[in-house]
Length: 218
Image 1 (cartoon, rainbow, N blue to C red):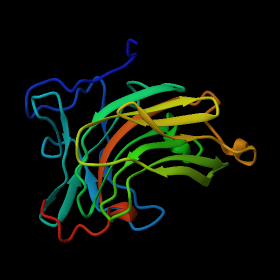
Image 2: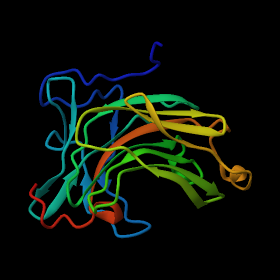
Image 3: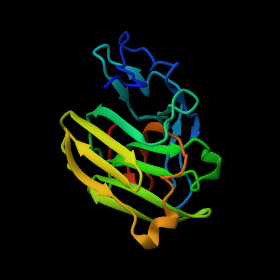
Image 4: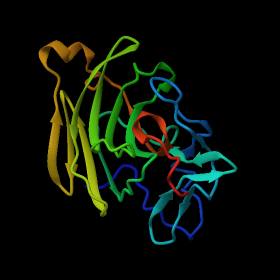
């Protein structure tokens, strides 16, 4: 199959992710719905950069008591309704940090009505890595369909396929979970309507999933 959009993160070491594919969010991390995240996202090569070998690195730093990190998104560059997303990612679980590869609907100002699918989240607080599809009732979340994800610190090919009434998750080509709404959940399932989703890669510090970064060396 020919991909409709891709990024192999080619470029010189220390360079930025391709601005034709990605936009950096800039500002404080999430402060709603639990312990506030501690990072300030910025477009800075100390926090997001190419390594010169076809890899993008997201890194958190602590500078004068302030935590900085990166969150990049394909919003404004690419989004798709249903279909398949693939990424090859290596995760480094670290106390206090909370990396994720996930998707939002293209009208994020309406969150959570825009929808959210978390292909993989890795938690610095000790929770097992997981994959989640969120259900929505108006402007409120109505629960989620989630599973623990296979996880280690090696490179793996991750995939999520979004189709009518089913969202399937794969690691190295092996399906480990399919989320389907029950009849009672059908009205809370956003993913059959025309609802394009865009990709996000981010590294949060603290928050409910990261835990306390105080003893982590940055």
